[in-house]
Amino acid sequence: MHEFRLNGVELALPSGLATPAILEKLAEGTYEEDEARAADRCVRPGFRVLELGAGIGYVTALCAQRTAPANVLSVEANPDLLPVIEATLARNGLSGVSVMHGAATGPVEEGAMAEFAVSEGYTGSSLDGKGRGVRVPLVSVHDLIRAHKPHVVLMDVEGAEAEMFNRPWKCPLRFCVMELHPRKYHARTIKKIVDFMSAMDMTYDPVTSRGKVLGFRKVWGAADGVEE
Image 1 (cartoon, rainbow, N blue to C red):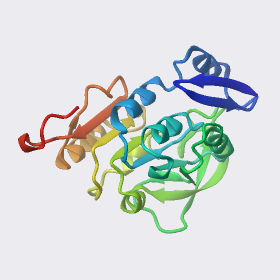
Image 2 (spheres, rainbow, N blue to C red):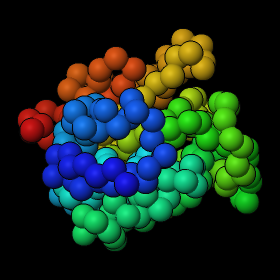
Image 3 (tube, rainbow, N blue to C red):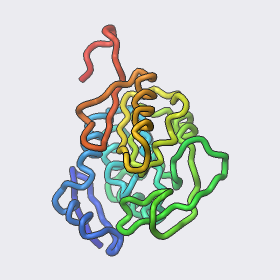
């Protein structure tokens, strides 16, 4: 078992789950630093958070600490990570978070399943990747948004984001941060995502954007006052 502490979050990974590169980032404190910065920027007390791609539960825990465990819904497709996420939350006194097993995507029929490729070291696992194949439930992002009504959406779903922007999200969205995967789709798909966010009165957020991580925040009117 490998144990770490990042930004006040206690983490423990079973031996053999992570690659040396992942363990090195955890030891250096650079693991998911962009995602952690996004959680610090976006999540505020009382905000509901939808996290798509929970990983080992590190950012999940950060979100739960900033709002409340009951306000966080995290979705993870890799079945190997579910007990790790639950252990992370329990270790940090955050067991009230809702953790769902499934691969988030666009519109799907109820009960739909798909082959999910689990890669070595767990990062990079995806619906269209290479690795050990497992059957996982498909979960519609629109159903999740309708049920949870998030103020914040954080996603790292290894290319599945391309299918999530075909109709408006009906929720009180304030921030959305996603990792793009331009090798998996055409530049037109990125433009579609940006146009979709703009149509929902969301604008580019330079604080949470870096490299392939693209952040958006709500556009506030003059009567709404100055944002923090």
